[in-house]
Image (cartoon, helix red, strand yellow):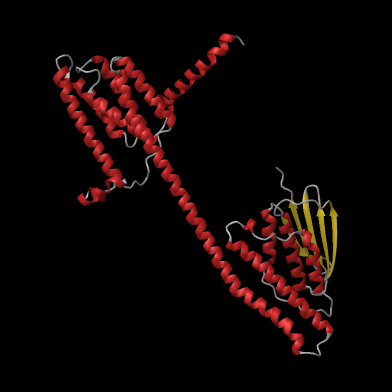
Length: 423
């Protein structure tokens, strides 16, 4: 690459950027659609005292634009007829006046198209010198109004491109007044861009307030659920723990086996209360990660010990490399095994249960299979019917699968596959 090519690159990039701005304004740029509902600006609320402020703001704006367009049409045609009728037919002056006035009537619905039409009309009428000044006054007013609407509703590239086109047109029509025209053109562009940014900031603030209200409503609902859970569940679990602890004192001659079972009931009730308080802590806070650590497979032995104390014959087999688990896997696996053991305790008390955990290269695999209950076992306890649904939902959250069904020996098996998430 030569030195001349290197020196010319910034100039080419600058020219390319200017051409893209001009193309956006003249050809490709589009404006934002008008809002479906527009409220009256705060500085015009006083119009309610006159009755005008009670009308739809959009309809009032369109009506005012029509009045301005008719005024520009009448004034422009009268001026052209007075100053240029001797050199041009009346029908041509009528068409020119209409072309300069119609953009004002269109600027609310189609600001970019209205500005393009106004610039085209000015470009056609200015070289004819129909009036004593370089620009037809009515057309200049219409162009400035369209520039403001364009800046309010169009992207920044379109606004800058429109300013460039107006500046180039001013230099082409009359270089003596070009600087003044450029200053005049910059006023509606700057004011419109400021209004656009302010409206965007207000919309963003309103969206943030809406999200805040939704988050606050969700948090309040979660707190209400937490209170109801505490009132309904905590009382009964506490009573179970107290009664299990007090029963041996009420019956001094109680068999040791029964005392052990009551102690296990009390321990299970207290553990349930602890788990419930942890869940309530999650419900009461906006971010569950700020609460106490959730159980994982590192507490599997504690879970199995509790099941053995309840009368199950549980064996555990762990294979693979039990390395650090991704977030959510440990808790999901713990809850699935916990629910499967609870189902075995309810429906097959005293049975043999085989728990398998396999850390594979592609997934974490869990298996909990229980055999039929012994003949002398107590009758099965009724369940709530939501355990299997809850396990499937937990597995689905990690894109996993859960399979359940009876075994040939008359028991029941739960198998879960939790695939590792890859980046």
